Image (cartoon, rainbow over all chains, first blue to last red; front, side, top):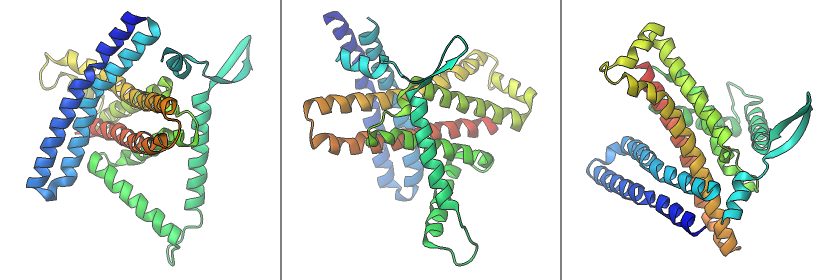
Length: 72
Length: 227
């Protein structure tokens, strides 16, 4: 069990990448809205798209972690 | 931890055994819960759209018209002018996924936590996307569109046919499963007050965002296919 737990923990490290990606995207989006408040609808849509794509990596890591725990 | 995951993922999902031939035809819990969602939604729709008038509209009809126009505008912006014909499907999927994600509030297991449901939804999406391309361009041009912009990346384009539904399906499934697992853990540690506050984020906000993302990506693909 101990080694599989470590494996699952390593798989959960994918969250780091998603966190950095989403925070960068949000920082740029707030910048863009501050510069052009009238375009906030379009920026919001692009932000949600970017966040969804960046978040997918974290989700894959999570699914892999669960697979490691369940099928080891 | 492992017991809880086993309980969530590996437990027997069958709810109804229907005798069929020599064995049983199993109906899963997720199917029954989606029937409940469908029944609630259909009753809601029938109640809201009954007795519509042209003049002297009631408050209920005004609210329904406003929300329909609003959701049509939101989805129409995503789809663009050319693909507006696919708006009803996208809105249907949006409402269905949003309600199924939020059914955890009533103590039921969300049907989108079953991989089969999300897989079916994403397969429907990718079939619709490719059909939209075929209808718009015709079969020959559709086949030719795989080799654009260069012949070298044909392989990548064909691979995309499988990656898109996989990522749609896994994103929805993983998000809902993750939210449910975290909620179960929190309920295990602090049984009162805190789960109620956090379920606003995990059940309502995350559920709506994921439904929106699913429809957003589907409509983006459709828009790309009909261009």
